[in-house]
Amino acid sequence: MEIQQCTPVIGAEISGVDFSRPLSAETHDAIYQALIDHLVIFFRDTEIAPEAHMDFAGQFGQLDEPHVHYPHVDGFDRIVRLENNADNPPDTNSWHTDLTFKQHRPFASVLIAREIPPVGGDTLWSSCYAAYDRLPEGMKNDLEGIDAIHDLGDFRNDFAGTKGNEPGEVRLNQAVSRFGHSVQPLISTHPVTGRKFLNFNESFVTHIAGMTTNESNALKTMLANHMNKPEDQVRWRWRANDMVMWDNRVTMHYAVADYMPHYRLMNRITVVNDRREQAGVH
Image (cartoon, rainbow, N blue to C red; front, side, top):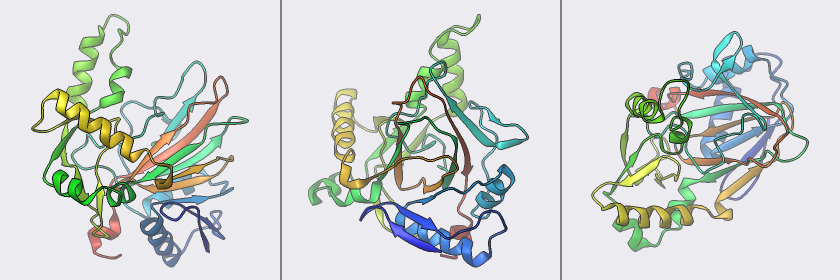
């Protein structure tokens, strides 16, 4: 197995792993360490079947329940089918960390490109470590102890419109009740590395606790602009059968929606907990 860094702060491409046969425990451990070190890891041309996708993701922790909103791959209800074209445009073209409105955000995601457009459709990831490190020391101190309120944020757009005989406000209230809220510190600590990171994303942080709406919006705008820094990012140009895994605790990502009207099909598994963290092995 060979590991090649993509940028100084985030991302590494891993080669020499044969996903057509079961991987050893040592290989899984080495992949996990690469993930902890580089935050997002890329594998080219995996040609990995859904069964192997499930088995690989399951080596790192418990798999998420079937998604309540997105469809799944036939016969594999834990593999989300992310399918987009002009008739079904994507809703992930904003900087976000997956499901931060849950009480416990997922550990990682494993995403495979099944069909890609002829051009476009890249995905970017950003390091929340780097965003914290770049804050002025005074601002680091100011943000300590401040909490942010996370909810379904941008996903409100999926529920605000009337569907059938059900008004948008009814659908939206039901969605807010189902997904709930989470209150988390703006400055958090990674449970494995002990490094601090900026725990903010513009898609799901809707309010800064203890502030007026005007004050909250001003701080949110400043943080969003601060975190949108190319030096903190890696951009991946997909090929069919590429597989990417990222640490959802300390990264944001952005799926570029520039490929309409072409078709893009991705398969994603979400890993809820970090098995090695819980076992104290890292």
